[in-house]
Length: 300
Image (cartoon, rainbow, N blue to C red; front, side, top):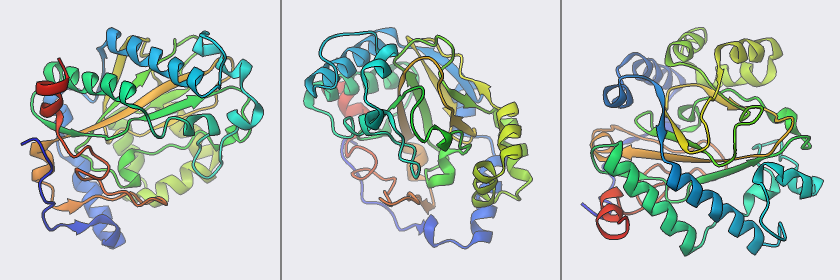
């Protein structure tokens, strides 16, 4: 199947009552996941050096093409040439202006992205999958205004993503003093949510508003040890957060994929809870064609 199927009739998660959502989350967090069956753990580093290098070159090309930098430079030092306004975070969503230049990417970048999708399909996920139409590119700089937006501990599920997704977190800069990214183990994530009776809205409120609870989350979440050239794959149920950087710029990509078998068996229509209310379905959040199209036709 190369193109999107019609989405079967499902109950939209935003139309569920609080009790229905809590029961769904309890079931989600107590079952063995697709990720665990695939990798026999809840997070691991996977090698992808040629693709990491290609993505880094593309980021540099786009920065130069948009006159954000004048010439090639170590991306870890990007903050040294960025204005305060470019680096400053929007406190509502934690996005800075420089990251918005990567919301839309050109054909050259997409070709690199599709080769990576084919690589993941061929080497790590042994069945066709839907994948994010546009990867999320994040540029985090030290000493940026509104850095206190972070940390905000969450899992993508808490913002409407399907729990069957696989998260790929790809650093495009060296680890240096740390990536400013922390991830809990699944066990710690479950224990944290149990205290809120699997009510994610209550959990996130405390994680943002209660400094002591945020510190507790920090004690449970480990800094991502992923070196440049590897990608961190993790179970989407794992709670995680960015955190303020102190000495260098970190550039990373979030790529989420959803195996076709898992999508077919979902009885809930997952939809984002944010401003865009994006639907997690082919032709919406996910590309209208699945991984095998790009492996067979463009991924060689």
